[in-house]
Length: 310
Length: 314
Ligand SMILES: Nc1ncnc2c1ncn2[C@@H]1O[C@H](COP(=O)(O)OP(=O)(O)O)[C@@H](O)[C@H]1O
Ligand SMILES: [Mg+2]
Image (cartoon, rainbow over all chains, first blue to last red; front, side, top):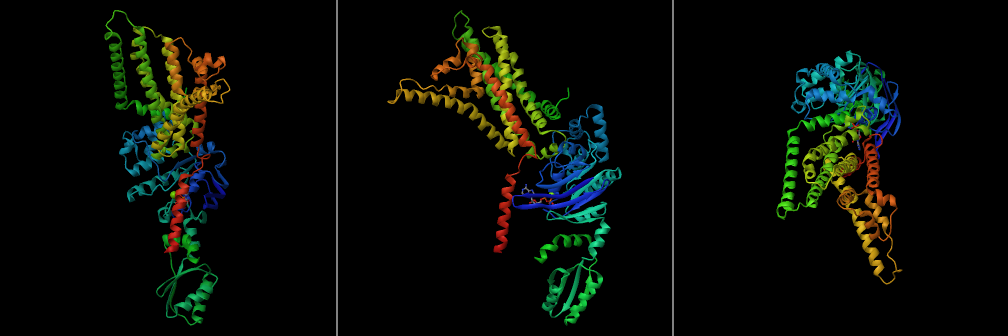
């Protein structure tokens, strides 16, 4: 459904997308996760035909998204991270306006719009003016709006940000519903846990690159080996750090008093060898534990790793 | 015929607002007041038994010039706010991800903005035709005025659309469109005046070759000036003398008879061509894949630089 290769985008000297590769299968509910400024919005705007790429390829549903933006727009429904609504329209009129853009008018339009508003639990608000709706409702209305032309791919940029927990929960339910109906959905967030339970696949982006991608379980498994090792030593912390730094498998480390947190990518064997080496160097290791990370820590590890070592 | 969806929505919003109905009412009341006041001056004060047709004609000219001035003032305000306003309210981006082409958005916005203004003008035609009851002006004159108003609205509207698509905020876009309008109307007229004056000064200076220099080229600039088109129309409706002939001899030369005889048609054609050009530019500015993003870039990179240097200090 989505094939992105080598996508490149810079703003002046700042590289926002650094040869990004990403592929999303039909029917996936894809979670696009990364810290603020990672390039999620930039990617989504490019594949929605709102922003020009500086290099690379992007195909959506077989269409060259960078060239044929007119056909592209029939295939996608896009919801921006920040958007406004026409306040002086009623919710149903708001929907009908977008339907009219796709040539749907009259009774057909009204039926379709009511059906879509029902899908996002807004059917009782049809006659309300848009500016009287809450933020969560506006968000859902905008989602319904993005469905008027029955797009194959939904691109939703941080649809849950700024919503209260109840509204978030409702949004999640709707998205799951849409997914069950067979829509391919890309949804971005800067909070991994927000997407983890709902998405079929997660892609983590950082500094304009995809760091890792897979099902939530995959990622957890893959990353468990990179979970931080917590080492507690007594005395001689400097030499401990020296030994750790000499080990090529150690990717980063931080020190907090006598606690050392190490990011080490390697098998359990290698983990054991490192411990042996510490002990051999006369360091008194009190505890040596691989953290069973929670999602957020995993996320922090993946996205922060490169910086710590520099 | 399928109507432009943007046009449809805007018209629906405008027409159902009470404000609009009140505006139409007040506008026409004001026109009636001016007309009656004019008739009072021309017919009653002179107190003679003869009816002076030229008085009625003068009232008519005052009315249509007022309407033209209103168009020149309102159209930029409406059009300049149309796209920049959507950008400000963050509704434009969604519109751009729909299948609407930039040109359709531009046309829809332009048409809805100027049809509001034109509706004001049309609603006042009955008031204006009061003069018909007195005479001196005929139906053809009125139709010519309607044509000029439509062309002027399109032309000025296209300037407004261009500014609106180019700039991010409604207020600067309005300022820019009035700026361009000022150049189109003011600068062309001033150029003609300056060319004429300096030609005469040259003639009276010592090294004059014995003839006035021909500066009719400056006269052609007035083809793009909608105020002059209006002025020329009023003159040709009100008198038998040819304004263009007078102007070209004032500029010490002659113009081809095409311009002398068909100035009105020529200027309308030129202004419609410019309208197309401005609309094309507006659509281009609106197209996200053709437009380069700039303002944000410079601001952000500056901020970033500041932050970086701050980090070094700290
Ligand atoms: N128009 C722009 N001009 C300059 N820099 C930009 C612009 N848009 C985005 N950026 C920068 O590009 C980076 C990626 O932005 P974005 O894609 O919005 O990230 P995300 O959505 O993941 O938070 C950010 O560092 C942001 O500052
Ligand atoms: Mg973003």
